[in-house]
Amino acid sequence: MDGPTVVNFGCRLNIAEGEAVRTAATAAGAKDAIVFNSCAVTDEAVRQARQAVRRALRERPGAAVVVTGCAAELEAGRFAEMGARVVRNDVKALAESYGAGAPVARSKTYSPALSGADHARAFLGVQTGCSHSCTFCATVIARGAARSATVEAVLDSARIALDRGQREIVLTGVDLASYGDDSGTSLAALVEALLSLPVERLRLSSLDPNRIDDALFALLTGEARVMPHVHLSLQAGDDMVLTRMKRRHRRDEVVDLVQRLKAVRPEIAIGADLIAGFPTEDEAMFANSLALIDDCDIVFGHIFPYSARAGTPAARMPQVGRSMARERAAMLREANARRRHIWMDGQVGRMTKMLVERDGRSGHGENFASLLLDRDAVPGSIVPVRIGARDGDRLAAQALEGFGA
Image (cartoon, rainbow, N blue to C red):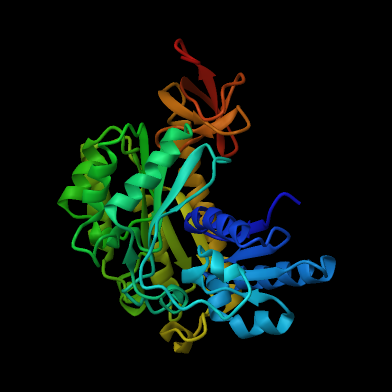
């Protein structure tokens, strides 16, 4: 083997941090290690991590099997009993975590995490942890309080991505919109600093709607290099559920935010995180969440059924039940697919610039529409296209004059 095998589960932040894990394990000389960078957003994510670890231990008995990430924090004892080495989430980027000796002490700082050159887009993790303690979420248990990388360190990482030819940077974090709370700066200030570099496309991952202030709103709606794609951490569309989740926004505030975003920049595509079957959710509450898809024109839904996370307040609330949660999640996904297909059909005939993925044919438009080119292109290039007919969840893309320039 040329180096350690790193398997990333879950979010874009884990993709970014996975490259740091690979570098650290390589530096430690753990060239034959298999490192599982796990996720714990749902019990299914944890189950998948356990299953993958068991398989590796069974199939590769001589290899060092390491588990890190959020599931490793929540179930360290269980993974250790299976025979895996556990590395804490906040020290997984340190080489000494993969060498011999005592476990490495927790870190109180955060260094930016940059994904590898194998992606057309560069995922750049700029913060970790969360300080808001939503009742359903185990992130605070797994990652601790919010911590941000310095602006200077983020810019250094962005320069690395640009120097290797990655023309789109995606900022990510556990609670991205809280960036800078611990250092007296802000996400808007970080975005402005990044735009001082020759960044052609900048995309932001999930944002807490409560934290989109005037400065960030102005960048989302008025800066051409910030892509017209806003993904919101909504979780529900009913005020009682939001209260019991301990979210800081309410339904009308989100609807108003989306209306204001689209009034200034109509081409913005809206994405959202939504949970189905939260404890105590009745039919009327669920109906409000279902209606939110149309009320906020949500075309990119990240939808999953609620699953109780041990140690969280929501796990002690009256449960709706797994089957009901899954049924409601399916209804949300169906409604979201219908809304997305209507939106995609409305894109036909429009022109956009497409970032080409490593296969040379697929990619995404500025509004994150999934596109398939009618000819080969240079991976990582940005090409002008006219959008054609929809095929499922992908749109055809015809290369225009200037293609390949």
